[in-house]
Image (cartoon, rainbow, N blue to C red; front, top):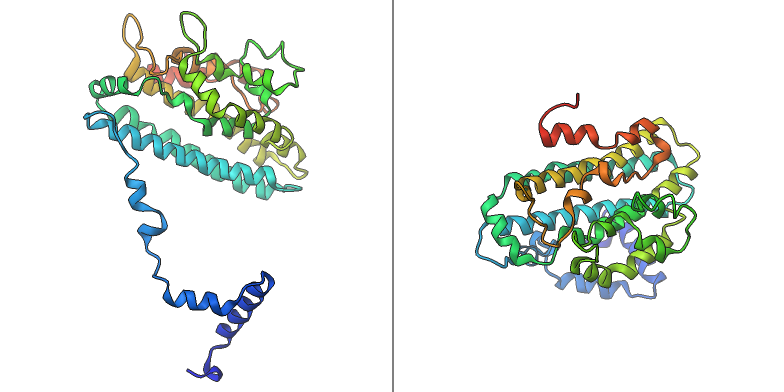
Length: 321
C-alpha cells in the first residue's frame, strides 16, 4: 500500500500520535519500531493471572481454608473498587447530582455483591474445618482490613465514627489523634476481660495508624457528606442513594458478617472468641454500635431502631412483633 492508498482515518491517527509524542519531546518513529517487535498482549499477562492464582497460600492442610483465603481476597478487591469510586467523588470540583448518582450507584452495586457474597462464608465451609484452621491464623482478624476503615473515613466525618459512648463528650473535638483513639472499632478490639488493646489492634495501628489519621485530615473537607452538602442540584433521588449507602455499609454488611460469626462462633453457654480477641458480639451488631454516616437524613425513630428489625428477621428467623 503506497501513501496515497492509506485510509484517511489512519493518517489522522498517525498525525495525532506525532503531536502527542512531539509535545513530550519523544520520537514517534522509535515507538513505532518498538511496536513492531512487541509481542501481542494476552489475557493472562494483562491481569497477571499466574501471580493472582499463586496468592492463595493456606497455613494448614484443611481444604476449606483456601475458600476462606480466596473469599477475603475477593472482598478486598471489592473494597478497592468502592474506594476508587469514592475518591472520584471526593476529587470532583463543583460536583453535579448526575455525576454523584452514577458513582454512588456503582458503590451500592459493589456493596450488594459483598453482602450477598457472605453466603460463601456461612454456606461454603464446614464448621469443623473452620474451627480448626482458624487457630493457625492467630492473632490476625478481618478487623484488620484497613481498606474498610478507608471507606468509612471517605464516607463521612470522623465524629460520626466515634464510639457511641464518646460522641457527646467529643462533639467539639478537632484533634485527629483524639478522634482516632475513640473511633468505634477501637473499642471492638480490646480484651474482653481487661479492656486493654489486643495484639490485633496494636499491630494494626502500627501498620496503618499514621495513614488513617492522615486520611481523616485529608478528607475532612471532601468526604461524601461534605460533597453532598456542596452539591447544588441534589434532589430526593440522591438523598435516597445516600441513605441506601448508610444502610448497606452500617446495617446489612456488618450483619452479614455477624450472621457468619453466629454460625461459626456461637456456642452455649459461652461463645467462641474471635481469632483476634475482638468482641464480635458487641462489635458487629449495628444496634450496639449505632454507626450512622448521615444522621441528618434519618428520623429520630429510624435511628432509635437502627438495625434492630433486620437482625431479628435474619438472625433469629422471624419478624419483630
